[in-house]
Amino acid sequence: MKCNVFSFSSHAIKRMFERSLTRDDVVCAIEQGEVIRDYPEDQPYPSCLILWFLYETPIHVVVARNDSDLSCYIVTAYVPSEAIWQAGFKEKKA
Image 1 (cartoon, rainbow, N blue to C red):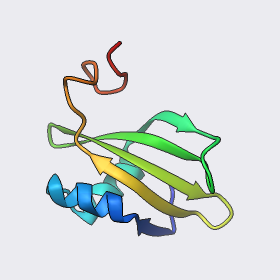
Image 2: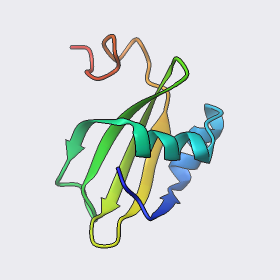
Image 3: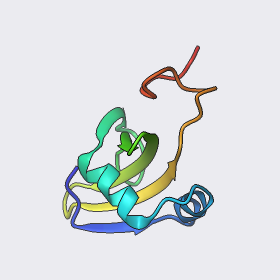
Image 4: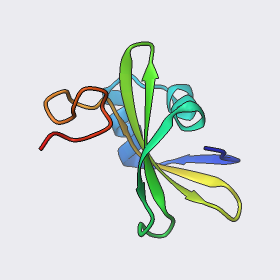
């Protein structure tokens, strides 16, 4: 996903700190990761869930993007739990 500007919610910063994720880790996830879910109805901008692997560790990032100026707002970033996500971390368990 292409972004000209990155802004981080306080929630995202808290989760990143708890998981020892850096700004660069999250930016790489956004720029190089795979969109695994879209949330087109989110406000004020549509958002998506991105999956990326930092070495062998999966990372999920929820990011909203203003398509008019390509500014991206990071809602949260976390390491998905194997208890909640299926193998590959793309689908939740039933």
